[in-house]
Length: 201
Length: 271
Image (cartoon, rainbow over all chains, first blue to last red):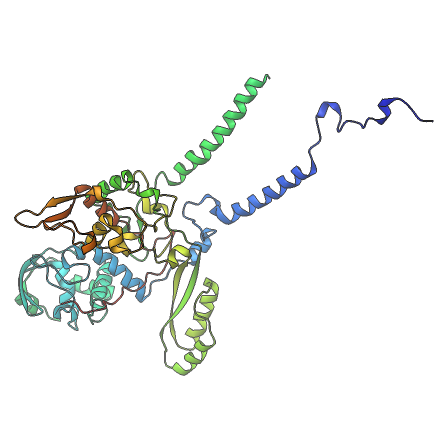
C-alpha cells in the first residue's frame, strides 16, 4: 500500500539538528594534506628558529660540516681582507702605491726579497725617512700599522702581498712573525734605507 | 557570550598571533645582532660604512632604486670541490686515481671520502665549499645574503623586484667610482642594452670655466653635452656612488660559509 504522507519521502536532515551540518570529507582531507605539506616545509626551511641557519642549510650540524678549513686559499683570502682594510688606503688595492703617500708593493725589491725579517719589521715598527723602491726615491713616514694585528693576520697579509700583483716571495708563517716580534719589542721606528739594511735577515 | 565579544576575542587572537610572529619573534632573533667574525680571520664584519656612503643610502632610498633593484642574493645549494694541491711521491698512482674520481659537485661526505682516497696515495688536497644557485651563477656575488649584511642599514632597502640586477655585492663587481657615476648619468653609455632610466637630476650641466672641473664625467660622444659644457656630479650623486661602492657581501661568515677564491693575478703588469 502506497503511503500518501509526504513526510515519509522527505530525506532525513544531515546530522542531528543540534550539531549543524556534518564536515564534508574533502575539507577534512584537504586540511590534513595541507598540514602535512606545511610540516614538511617547516622541517626543511625553519632551521628550528636558529637565526644562524639559512637556506640551503637545514640544521646546525650541517652548517658546521660545511665550514671551510683553512688552506692556502683561505690564508690568501684572510690576507686580502686585512690588506683591503688596513694597507690599501695608502698602498692601493692593487699594490701600486700612491705618489706622496706610499711606495708601491707590486714589484718592490723589498717585498720580493727572499728573507722576510725586514718585511715583518716594517709594519711592526714603522719606517721613517728615505728609501729607494723600484729605482725611485721615497722620503715618507709610515706608522706601525701592523702592531695591533694578530700573528696570524700579519702572516696572512704579508703572504698575500708576496703572492699578488706579480710578486714572487715565499710565504710568511705566523711562527715567523712571532719570532721576529719577540726580538724587536721596544725598538724605535726604522730609520730609512740605512736602518732597513742594518736589519740582519 | 554574545557575538560582539566573540568577534573581538577572535580578532584579538588573530592579530596578536601575527604580531608575535612577525614583530616579536624576529626582534628576539635578530634584535641583538652584532658584528661577526670573518671566517679564518680575526677581523669583524660588516664594517661601519663611511659617512658619505651612509648618506648615500638615503639617496638610494629617495631615488627609488629599490623599486627595480634588490640587495638580497639567493643561494639554492652548496657543493664541495676537491682541489689537488700536491701529487706527493707517487704521482702516477695519484693521477690514475684522479682519472676515476669525480672532484666537483660533491656533498661534504663524498668530498671527504675522495680526499681521503687521494691522501692515502700520498697526494695533498683541499676541500673547497662552493655555494650554488642562479644569482651566484650570474656572478652577482659569492654567497647568499644574511642578516649581518644589513647591520648598518636603516631603513633596509631589500627590494623585491629585479628589473635590474641585484646590488648586494655591486661594490665588489663594479668597484670603480667613475663607472658608477657614468652609469647613473647615462646607463646606456656603460651597458648598451640597459633598461635603466638615466638619473640626470643627480648631475649638473654647466659651462666649462677657466679650468675644466676635475670631477667632470668623461662621456662618450653620443651622451656628451654641447661643446663648452661639462657634466659634474652633485653631492647626492657622489653619496650614492659611495654607497654603491660600499655594498660588499663577499666575505665568508659562519652562517654563509664558502672557500674564498685566491685573489686573481693581475692580467697585465702595471707600471
